[in-house]
Image (tube, rainbow, N blue to C red; front, side, top):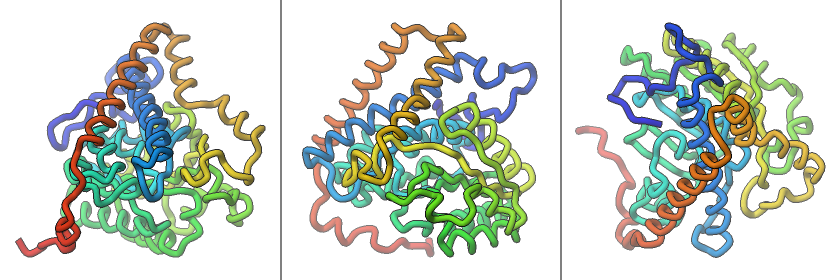
Length: 348
């Protein structure tokens, strides 16, 4: 997405058409931006799987393949001075927010030119320049931080918002309920977005949660709640756009259940999906690949041709290869870097 001056929205960030502007689906220029973002995430993650397999990436690695409409649809609506915080499946969101592919890949490779100087790795992307506040490995541990950011925005009299991504298993943690209670009580400008891919690691939602419409948990904290189809980028933009507008204008929080599906396993240690879901189930969800759905819509509307899709795909593959080459050439952090950035000076 194109960058703007601080505080100004990106050109494509209207939650609803205004002043005769085309609605989502009719705006060919917007749709090309959305398709580009989603394709970049898909091709990037495919190369991440390759890099992990040959030992370029160490530690844990959780791929975002299948969920690209969630990150692209929601983050395309934010201003540059808004905030994003997320859990450990964060590569796609980092790219959608505007962290460069070079910086993300170098971080995955553990190199000094990574967005966290090689210290965060796959699960802990962070970029102060884009207000991307991580990448957090503790399930649910980042949700109170999101409430704290919302409190800081309100305390300072700002009109920014924060989107807090989380998996559906987070709703069963105590930190989730404590944070939502504070957000509902204090009316904080937070959008709590559940990326409900149905499986917390290998446990189906129906086996772990007493309530299956998990957005209804927001009722306990007197906050707005909604759900949408996470494979449809336009549905994501509509629902999240309404929540962002509510947070920005009224400082009201929202809990959203975005129903999506990961096409890979929970992590690269479970790359094929293990034994907890059937091939038939996966094949059924693959029919609703969010990229294929958007491409088909654009082709039906005469907004893009097969040749243009191919050219865009080849361009993006080149960008991803460049990020690999850049990361591979980046130095590893020196040993003394272990002792840097341990504490932050908050007195200056």
